[in-house]
Image (tube, rainbow, N blue to C red; front, side):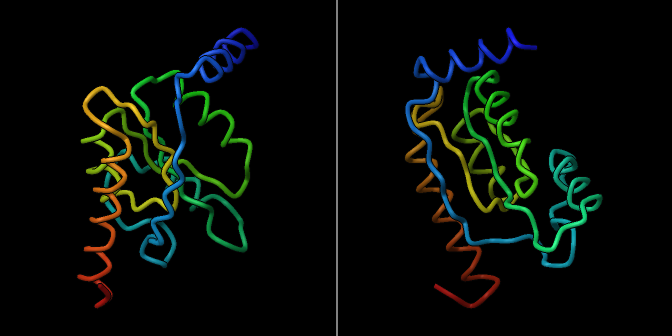
Length: 141
C-alpha cells in the first residue's frame, strides 16, 4: 500500500497532471436526496449520499484524466474528506463531456492534455452544455 502511494505521488509530481481545473457547474442533483440520473456509474455516489448522515449535501466531484493511476491517486486523497464524493470519472475529453451531462458534478478536476483532445476545450464544452441545461430547465440564459 505504501509503495502504491509513493508511486502515485511520484506520478502526480512528475507531471502526469499538468494542471487541474475546478469547474463550478452550479448544478445539483434533483434536490430530493440521491442524484437523479439513472446511471450505474453513479451508484457509488448515490450509495454514499443515501448512507451518510449529513447536514448539507456533499460536494460532487468528477475526475477526468487519461491515466487511471492519476485518477486513483486523486480519488484516494479526496476519499479522506467527509464532505466530498466522487460522482463520476472519465478518461477522455469526449467521455468527460458526456459523463458531466449525466452526473451533474459541482466540480470537475480536469487534466489539460487528454489523448483525444484538450481538457480546456472539454471544459468549454461542459460549461456550454451546463448553460444550455439551465436555460432549458430553469428559464435562464
